Each structure stands twice: as structure tokens, then as C-alpha cells.
Length: 392
Image (cartoon, rainbow, N blue to C red; front, top):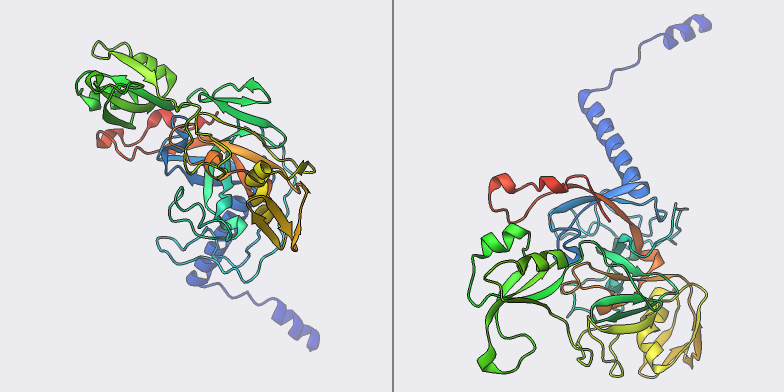
């Protein structure tokens, strides 16, 4: 009888799931799969600012590979899935920082190289630093390392490199670096009178331009002439010279002796600007430096905020730990120097310093969609020539 009952029970058909239960299971599976793919393999991002023009445009949607440099394990586990800092469409935080885990990086297929277009977490959203850089980057807020704002720039110097910018040209270890093919700089275009901006500039893909009445590099008022300040590539600047109403086109560069405020590092001993910067030595793991007043300005934030040290104090001419002055320091991780391809309109390492390796997110691979935020017509909303464009 017991055997018969057992057989009877085992042959009864299983209860069919309700439509609602099946929907819930499908949603949970989809969310779990999306979280794993987004964390382990690749993530989708959209370009919100022009700092990487003309390589990447505002409205470009791109895929970023996490497997190139190795994905990192979450530091902040209490987070709403598929969010970053806030819940979609609100200003409500999407995470709780009650639990902070140690970070580990899984093996990648390559290291960050010079010339890579890299997505990283903005380092200066550190609780000790965000208020210091509010004038350069408005609306900064402190976040855990893995939830700091995603930035995208080009790596121009890796750990151990000596970087310098001379008259707008990047030099690494004493050699001029090959400029990205679509790098963008600032030019003065003398026209003598206003022109049809839509036909001339927008037609040539130039979106950042403004009227300007002055003779570049001339302080004599009587010599003033009408023109435009435009941010564009060298090729397009040369093309503009071919118009009969263009008198001349000159690159706009800051003179070497002019000190630019808000530049990194904040030091009265350094008179640098965005076109004439450095030299600086980019820290590498295991590198030991003697701490001078200049080194303190360059590396003090690393020692205090990025390298995992405790009880560090920064004074104008010395760094202390546990109340004792440090004469030298050995770095605990690699660092990188990042710059935007739009060299005169980019808040990058020239303004807020080095990027630690534990802030690296991934490598930008290709643009899968591009929407013009200011199209000349509805038909031109999609930039068809940029779809599935590989990022170089």
C-alpha cells in the first residue's frame, strides 16, 4: 500500500506556474543576466559632453569592454541593480554605503596603453577632495570608488612615463606623441564680417564656434577685426582657409609664461597652462620618490586619498603620517594621465590629476548609435556615418 501511494504521488502532474509568476521569473532572469554581462563583459555608455570631440561626439552611444583591463569586483554591494549613483530619472541615491568590500581586479587581456580611449571613475569624487575641485567640476559629490562618475578620456601617459605638453603638443619621455587622427584644438578664423554660420561651420561638422572681435596676439585696438573662435580638427581648419571670405586661420595657444588658474597641481612654484604643462612623472607601483615641495603638490593627494594610507596630513612643505614627517614615499599602485581629444575644452588630468588603476573601468571599443542633440532637421537626427564606428 505504501509503495502504491508513493507511486501515485510521484506521478501527479506538477502545478503549472501562473502567468504572473512566469513573468516575475523572466524579469529576474533578464535582470540577473544583464547585471552579470554589464559587470563582467561590457557596458553601454553615452557621451554627454564635447571633451572628446572630434573623436567622440555628444550623443554617441558606445560599448566599453571590461574584459580588456580586467573587471573589478564590487565595493558597494548594497545597490539597486542596473543603476549607478541614483535611481533612474530621480536624484534618489541608488546605493547604501553601509558595507564596503575590498576591491579585486580579475585578469584582463591587456594593460592600459598610451592612446587607449578609457572609461574610469572620476577620482576627485573622493570625500576628501570633491569640495576642492568644485570650481573646475561643478556639482561634485562624494561617492564610493566604484560609484564615482564615469569619465572617458584618452590615456596620454602610463605609469612610469614622463609627460610634458609644449605649445599644445604632448611629449612622453622626451618624444612627441602621435596625435589622435581627429584631435580638436582651438583656432581664430578671421572673416572680416559675420558669415552664414549654419552653412559654413555646421556644414563642415563644426559645432563649437563663437564670434570674436580682436586681432589675435595684437593689443592695438585699431587692428581689431571680426572673426570666430572655433574648436575643430587641423584638417577642417585647413579647409576653412580655402573660403574666399576667410582672411587667415591661426591656432590659439596660451604662451608658456602665462600661468593658468585652477590647473593641477595648485602650486605657486609652477607656472603651467593647458598648452604648456609639466614635465610630470606619472607614478608607478613600487616607485620611490623623495618628497620635495613640488612633489608634495603633485603626489600629496595620492598619498592621502588614493593609496589606502591612514592618518596622513598635507602641509605646504611636508607630508605627515601619524604626526611624523615623511621624507620619501613608495607608491602602492599604477597611475595614468588622461586628456580629452578636445584639448581646449576638456576637464582632464591637467585640472584634477592622476587616475589610479583601481578607478579604471574599461576600454571604449565602438560607437553603436549616434544621435545629434541639435540636428538641422529631423531626418538628420541619426548620424548614420557613425553607427558601428570603431574608436581609435
